[in-house]
Structures are given as structure tokens and as C-alpha cells.
Image (tube, rainbow, N blue to C red):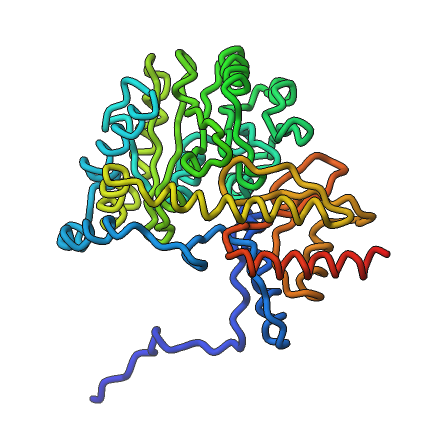
Length: 416
């Protein structure tokens, strides 16, 4: 008797087009203003127009290069770069960061108070994930960096924004901070030097902040990524050097100060004399272990960058100062624009004093008409009723001059 074949339960079932997979609803509000306009810029390029990309703070796109000493160290430690490394950072890198904090006037920070991340952005993302439950919030500066607001959307946490004071060199509006603290607030975030305004907070302003944080028993996360990029003799004051009892997390990176954004090497160190951050820090450790390993090349680069010679910083800042000066001069000469002089970083955040409904519409139309890509102020947060855009002054003077000529021509044509 023959064997009766069974039905093939693995037979493919043809049912036409498969239904669309629905993404998690928490991803729908995630935006990054600095990059969201790039697809439009690429369409403009296809049309034959030259686009000047003044939207991304990547020095390597222009005439900046990493110190040769960092590459030499990577070459000497090739084998270490090839394999897995400690998920919270190598001992050597974390010690270099602790020593860097000490040179900044912060005592008591050891390598055990340091976590290394795959870039400053990952430090932001994991520090927020380790801190916040849905519905909770941190106080964010406005204007500020879009990664923070994008992560709030992903975590299903409402935005809680305090204002920087444009009329006072974009210093912290301490009253705005105090008014916005609520029962769900877990921490205060500052960005100093600030992206996108280029402001640098004074020692007095930082002391006022620490007093408010202590009043409400809140820790402070200080994003100090641009700490060495300063102009006109401006003093940078690490927040942790001001605070005695209020716990501080300082976020840093070698991406901009040491011109290696592609190496993805950032960190957080804590100054926490009373151990208030112990459980929170361990939560970050757990998230780091979940991603298994740090970036090996980044760990070697951190040690080499922070312990090596720093001559490139003076050269970089001297070059950038000329471009800052040109940017400040030209923006304030264009009718309908005004700009507070940046004291640090490499961004300016001019105000648009023109009859427009939306600075995003302004920026998109400027891009389509002229090929100049800047970032709309709405994407960074700004005081209600005001309009701005962020412009990067990393390019050489001739590129910046061409961009300002195009912007000026556009405004003269559109706003007669």
C-alpha cells in the first residue's frame, strides 16, 4: 500500500500584498530638525542648484582635521580597537576623563564615576532612558538641542521647556526654570556652551541655577560638549565646579573639540558627594551592558585626545573666530535679521524680524530659492512669538560670504 502524502503545512500561503507593518506609536513624534530638511536639499541638488549645507556641525566636511597624535595612538593600539571593550568604557579612557574633570577644577571624580558612550548623542539617549518613566519630564532649555526633545517623544514624556533670555546674551532665565518645575520633574538640563545659540553661561548664572536645583532637590545634567571652543577670552565654568551639594552629571565628547565626530566617543561623569545618583548610575550601567560593548576605537581616541597635546584647539578657535566675526557682522547687516554674538561653539541663532508665519516655511523656501540650507528655529525651541534659524559657521569665509549674499538677496526679493 502506497504512502499517502501529508499536506504540506509549510506551503506558502499566497494572499496578495501583505498588510503594512505599523510602527510603534512612540516613534511617530521623533524628529531631528538638523537633519529632517536634508531630503529636501537633495531634491534641490537634483534640480541642478548648488546647495550650501550650513545645517550640520561636522567640522570634517570643511577644512578641519583631527590631530595626528590621535591617529598615531590608534595605530599603536590597533588590536585593542578591533575587539569588544568594556560596555561602560575602558579603564584607561575613564581614567583620562576623570583626570580631565580634575583639571577643570572638579575634585573627587574617579574612573568609577565615569561612563563612556558611543558618542554624546548616545549619552543623552541612555541617560534619559535610565531616568524617565512615561509622563515624567526633565526641564530642557529653549533654544536647545533637538535630540533631547526627540527622545522625550520616544519615551512618551511631555516637553517641559524653560527659556534662555535672548536680551541677556541667551543666559538662563532662572525664573522660567522655577516656574516650570512640577511634581513630575526629575532633573534640569543645561547646554553650555549652547547649541544652537553659541551662548556661554556666566559663573553667576550657574550659581543661580544650582540654588534653584537645590531648592527643588533636583540633579542637573550639564551638556558641556563644546567646552573648549570659546571666543573673546570668554571663561567656561564647568557646572560641577560650582555645585557643592547638588548632584551633577557632566556630558562631554571629543567629537567637536578634537575633530573626530566619526569616532563616536562621548561620556558622562558624575559629581555626587552624597551618593544621590547611585541607583540612577547603575541603571545606566545596565543599559550599557545591554548594548554589549563600547566602540574600541573611541576608547583609544578618548585617552589620546584628553592626555595628548592640545595645540589644535588654539588653531581651530583662531580659524573659527574669523568666521564667527564674519557671520555676526553679515547677519546684523541684513535687513530683517538680528543676532546675538556667539561666545562659544560654532553656531549662530539669528532672529527673523520679518512678517512670516513660520520659520520652518521661511527656511524651506530659502533652500528652494537659493540653495542655502539652515535649520528652522522651531526645531530647537524658542520663545513663543519669535522666529529664528540656526546657521553653522564652520565653512571657509568665501563659502559663508556666498551664503550671506544669497540670504540677503532672497530677503530683498521676498520682503520688499
